Length: 183
Image 1: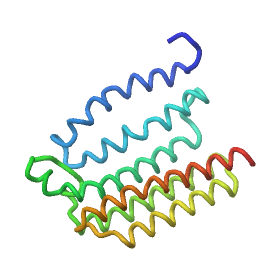
Image 2: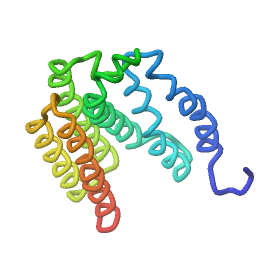
Image 3: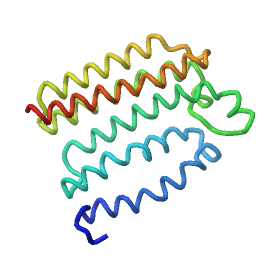
Image 4: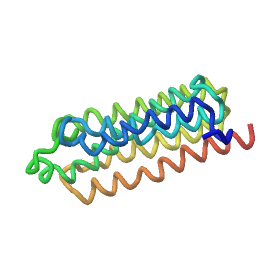
């Protein structure tokens, strides 16, 4: 622990993440929205990495984390639609069951919109240039296309929409990386 590779804040955040990581497997049994727990846990690396590099949690990391969490909640809700019958039979919770197809059609675009707005906010706070905003715009266009073609009654379509988020992530990361390289 005393190697100097990580700041005390980032080490504390690592320890603080353990209850979240340990609690996630129970979330489907005890909550109606385990996607919220997943969103918090899965994206913990963004503020933790920022804390390791900067020694603080200020700046653009908070809107970045919020955007990542909104995005994860949305895409995992889409994924959960392919498991609705199994989750219901097993007595598990999921946003897909809680929201249903109608609620999902309302909330996924809102969550994706919130993600894009938060990523723009992160870019503004960071003083980013055009590459970051171009990456956010391209990622947002991919999310919009995903929403337009969403068929929640078709498990294969849900899986395809879920998997398309890999490209969204690469697009966002490419904009951030290009911004860091040339701005």
